[in-house]
Length: 119
Image (cartoon, rainbow, N blue to C red):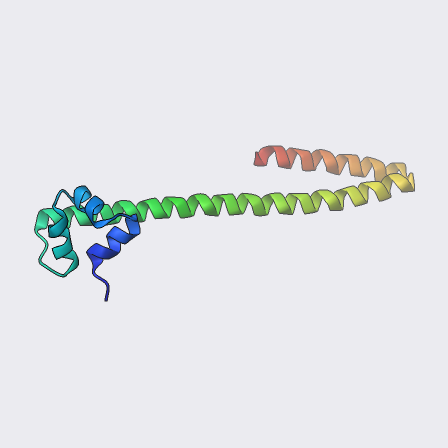
């Protein structure tokens, strides 16, 4: 089983020297913690704080990515709807039926209102 101090250091992508500096201890002291030596309460508190900070940062990055993915999905869905609407519009105007053309214009106004509210 991996040592939690080492796991956290690797999650931060730090060398032992850099991580020891973050904790405010010496390089050899950090090596001892990673080897399983007892960790004093002050260092343990710093480790817990760093672990929480890392996890919150990861969660924030995940949320931002989820938002980007959702927007991309919405954009693809809207593009698909746009293509479908253009096919219908072309067919309606090709028919020359004034009633259908007016119904289409009315539907377009409603669609535009819905889109403007989404933005």
